[in-house]
Image 1 (cartoon, rainbow, N blue to C red):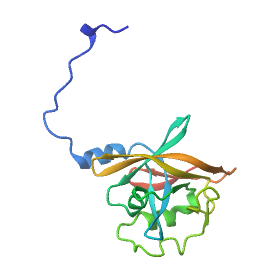
Image 2 (cartoon, helix red, strand yellow):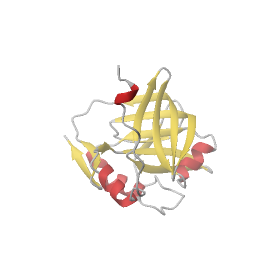
Image 3 (spheres, helix red, strand yellow):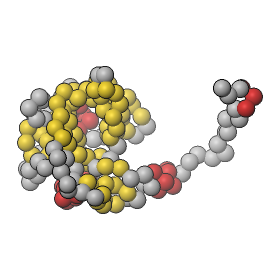
Length: 176
């Protein structure tokens, strides 16, 4: 047990943390790359993300962080289910396309092979190493993003020997 006397007092920051340096430091954390899909005003919308985490096993929950202006988030906030497709290295091109800001609202997935989830009907990327279908459990505003907690209502995890697509130091790569 740690006594109160051995706990150092909190350190007051002398100046705000520089966001560019923070981004650079976080870039040293390798993360998987996924695509989040939903629907917004009757159209499939999608976004490449690298902020995905398991939250709970009872109930089965995961979280994803989405920019506050993302169309995917708008669909989720309107009550649409959402899907997550964990990408493999051969998905690099579509990850880049779906990560570009300013993509048109209509036909975002027209040139991307996808299927419909059995539990929710949400679009899921073909050939993903794992897919999750979710309904919204909670949305928490967090700075310029929102933390979306989803209850997993359907999933698939296919066996694969293919390398995973990862994000590291600001670039996409692969992990074998």
